[in-house]
Image 1 (cartoon, rainbow, N blue to C red):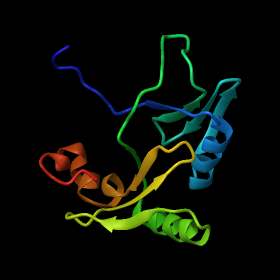
Image 2: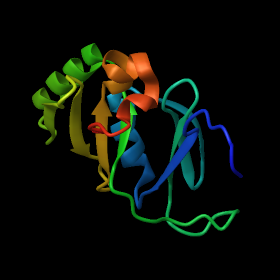
Image 3: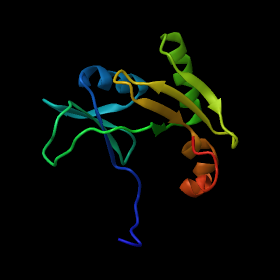
Image 4: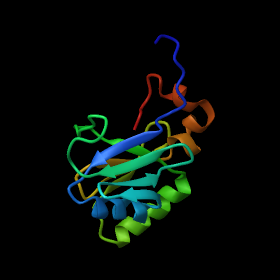
Length: 142
């Protein structure tokens, strides 16, 4: 497997007892619905990635839920500021915008299923826009 080249994360799936409520949370952030089935909802999370919201339980490929620390959605600074205003006005609890050492900023919040979500402008407006993921080598990674 040495030398494999990856273009990014194309899919992330979260488990939720109430996929409708969790999907609505992400739709309100600005993601768009791609598809839905009886046990899953797919949302577009950029031009080359999607976010799945699935009911608990084993699926067709032995998929099952696990734990993660958090995940980040890439947004530009203008969108970050707009979302902070909307979240503040809507009574949604969140932290931020937090400014990191390199000048990039993040908002941290929990979705209705308790997943920690970061909205981060690093790859849109900060060092990541110029140097990609290489800019994180030894630096603050949100």
